[in-house]
Amino acid sequence: MSFVIRPSREDDLEHLYEMAKLTGGGFTNLPADRDALAGKLATSAKAFANTGDELVDETFVLVLENTETGAVRGTCQLMTQVGQQWPFYSYRLNTLTQYSQELDRTVRAEMLSLSTDLEGCSEVGGLFLHPNERAGGLGLLLARSRYLFIAMHRARFADRVLAELRGIIDDRGGSPFWDGVAGRFFGMSFQEADYFNAINGNQFIADLMPKHPVYVAMLDDDARDVIGLPHPTGRAAMRMLEKEGFRYEGYVDIFDGGPTMLARTDDVVSVADAAPRPVGGTALEGGEKALLATGTLTDFRCCYGAREIDGESIGIGADCAQTLKVGEGDTVWSVPR
Image (cartoon, rainbow, N blue to C red; front, top):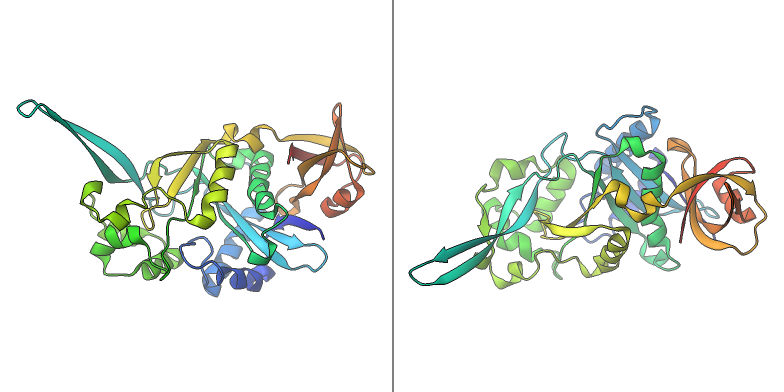
């Protein structure tokens, strides 16, 4: 069975909608709403059709396709420049230190401050793999294909890149963080607010959210204990991001308190290590396991395969050449698996 990462098409809508229904909430980039998903696919098609070489606000949607059946079994997204249509809000976890000379006591208070510090960054997000395919490293293929895409279209992305991880969601589909912070001001459940954000954007946060810092000590234990923690299903994703060079720097999601991971784009391992080489042969047997990609924009394709680097050229296997639709002389980018 072979899988390939390719650009989304508008006829992928039903596949994405069926996967969106499996996310369980808190997944803003993949809402279970056909109209919203259709709009996202149309936006992505426009981005892929843009052959310019400038940094503008765009969203690219990639999908994981089973090449034997044609079924779409996963998806991921790249946002080139967040915070352009409406502010990109985060909470920043800071510490305020105060000292009383009379008491000879120092008090340190953690605070959550509403911030737009990350405006202008690129973002990798929207990664979802069908539950029946969560084996064989396909999640890693989805995640790292985005970095190869960035390396191959570097001018279209900012100098910093972020990844938001879904926070803790309880058995009822609620968020302890939302209930303890923003939910007190909005009169909306987490599910309602999350869905509204996915469909309409988060301008309502700017309109209604208190601008003063929130003292963490004043939150209830349930809200305080989940700040900066990823959902259990996102722990592996957090480890993958850390291996790529992303770090948690105290920014958390305003809805569920999940951690935001940050990296310098050129320091992301799979961006820095990716290199183009002409294909010298397509009959390789054995070789080093790798991620391999080819094509520009609408022709982008990425898959697992084997490689053997020989000077300036690269040898790949016949199956990989068929999946990527390349032959001798064509250019392939790769990084070790």
